[in-house]
Image 1 (cartoon, rainbow, N blue to C red):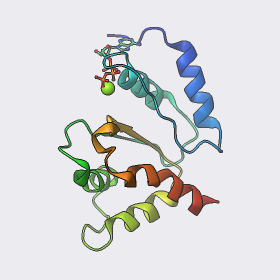
Image 2: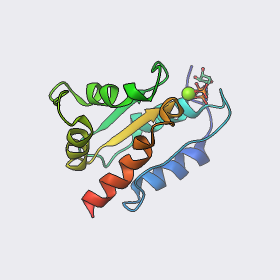
Image 3: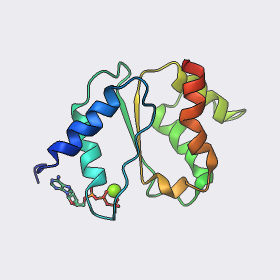
Image 4: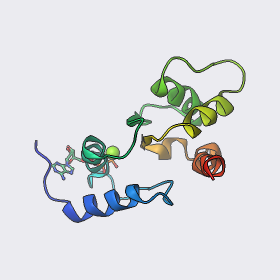
Length: 126
Ligand SMILES: Nc1ncnc2c1ncn2[C@@H]1O[C@H](COP(=O)(O)OP(=O)(O)OP(=O)(O)O)[C@@H](O)[C@H]1O
Ligand SMILES: [Mg+2]
């Protein structure tokens, strides 16, 4: 089914993503309101991210412990899964201009690491 409407929301989020001071955008809304569909529409049309867009759906995760391995898997098979995966992921992401889409990230919201992620990246970028 084609994407319908939501022009104001698309424009708003595109403007946020184009703002270099904005490190994280969160879409909140009731179930079925169209958060995922809007995000996919944005991801397909967004520009300005030299390392592209990575979309990771966390809906199937059974808990926060699976977040870092799932993120590593989404980013590519070249990250070390052994020692300090969190550090390796931060290093990897900090050197990239990438839009990372985490759909259904409430699955991992117990894990405060996910909230630390953008702050950590911001510190490294500044
Ligand atoms: N703008 C739109 N144009 C066309 N179809 C849409 C639009 N927004 C949502 N839909 C459709 O409505 C249904 C629900 O949308 P979506 O899955 O994006 O909701 P959601 O907010 O992500 O829900 P959840 O909170 O359960 O993850 C999907 O079938 C989706 O394709
Ligand atoms: Mg959704």
